[in-house]
Image 1 (cartoon, rainbow, N blue to C red):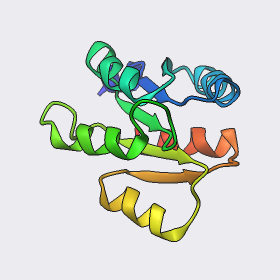
Image 2 (cartoon, helix red, strand yellow; image 1 turned 30 degrees about the vertical axis):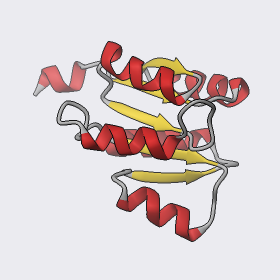
Image 3 (spheres, rainbow, N blue to C red; image 1 turned 45 degrees about the vertical axis):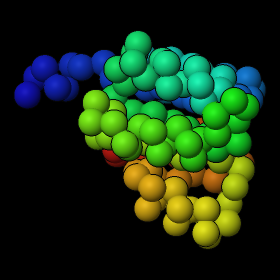
Image 4 (cartoon, helix red, strand yellow; image 1 turned 180 degrees about the vertical axis):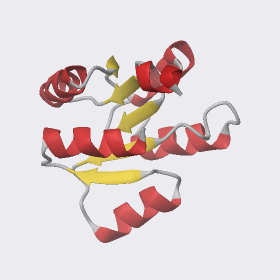
Length: 126
């Protein structure tokens, strides 16, 4: 039990907006998480294999491979299907939220967002 408490969780943030990435990274590092950044879906899928994250924060509208496709690929693979995913996106309509949650996302946070609230949601999931 002490091992789990002392574990430093790894979070992969897949987000193409550098300003958002910087704010999220800073807030998560303040909560003592290891944070890895990917700026598009293709890079994000590669980094999942390299970093073995405990949680993924995933934007939807990104170059190369969008977040919907990334989520679908993650949930289709045995090695990654159980990694919790928080969708962080400017797409804020009810249908998109339902699609994300039914697609396997554990939470859906619309932009603009509170970095403190996002950190709290991460804490709850982990």
